[in-house]
Length: 576
Image 1 (tube, rainbow, N blue to C red):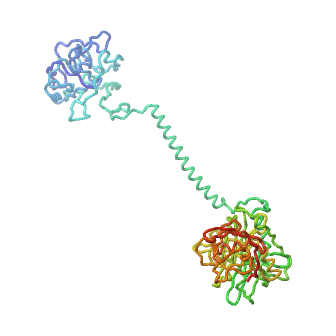
Image 2: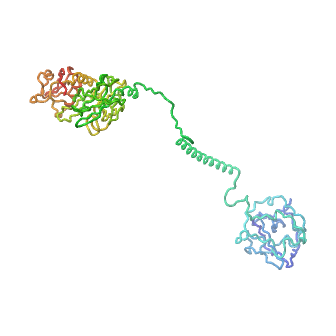
Image 3: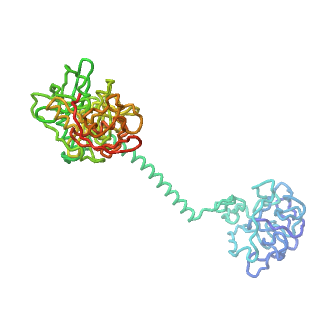
């Protein structure tokens, strides 16, 4: 608090050198500082420090009490001689002047000689008088914040007595017992207080503490949850990998049904595998591996011509059954034009023929299963669908004179077929044979038999079983197969659309043959067979060989810029 400034500077009372104070002249009685009806101190509010009371005066000019509210005590005196009074910061009145300035003060100090009407509280050794409870500033504003009297010495309070020779309680009898300390005397307005803060920080209240506590609890819960989750995850992962502690015992599902639906891939494979065999062929110049299937209980097995071709006339053919039994086989007959061959095993009991289906009833999208020994991996099962029908393909032709070229009106499938699948069965959902796997198309190559080493790209071709059945029967019964013919020689170098009949100079139309009787002439271009377009000589041969000798065909041909239709009956020729 700011000490009240004296209204008019006056000389301070002198102090004696013998330890006693000079008595002030004509002292006036001191009014009760806080009594009822007492005159209000500092009635003039315009004066600096007017809001501070004058506890011991007439209300106009008085010094503050020695240990009053925020006042500074006077400097102590010394017994060995006069001591100068503590100087103020300036000779002129200042709002923040110390309690005792160099100007004379009209009122005597409260404890100068004990003759003042207001005796010091401990002059006679009496008990301390408690200060009145009334508020020191009943009608005035609150005093300003305390300011240190000497800015150059922060925290150093002024001496309580001007004369250093006088002890604090000079009038008290010597040897008197010390009186109890007055709590009002020990009050230090400049000391730090735990409840007062001037650092700009807010004082904690119960709501803020509770909110901080809640934040700490939530943060702690989150940390505990994260740590618990990490530990639990690590323990769970360890237990899952190691099966817990102790001996490891892996879980296993209970026994399920061992049966499979007959039309499932597993059911089809279980039914067809006992009838499928693997062929190993070796000759003087070559060897190879392929697949075949049992046609009857007499030991006839159907396969591809290019599978048995390496054996030649005196090579060896070995048959291995699905159960691992092996037997030697002999060649019954083969036909390069249809790429089919029949071999026979003898002395083998318990043969299970594979039932034959009807390839004319097959529809695009029907499920199929291919069985064989790709790359000599016996009993391999793959599945797919019928991708297309009546796909004209040619295979072989390695001889150069096209006598070994195969013409097949094939079934196309996306069931994986690879080298070694040749001659194996393509079966339907009822485990009936609908085709003989014969050729594949590989990336960067044309149609070829799977005797090469190209892999599957989902384009496999099978000879329709209807055609295979007829050829197999002929090979078993006669040792050779017949081909249906129309009796013409085709110009295989023709690059236009359709199949062109050669010139007369080449003898392209056989006299008395089916084409001659139908009125076909040299140079005619055949464009359709039974309403299906043909674009080349190979396609015409495939369409014709898809029929039996004696079947009737309707051909559409182009002659001299016009078109006409002719009908003919297919002839027969022995297969080579």
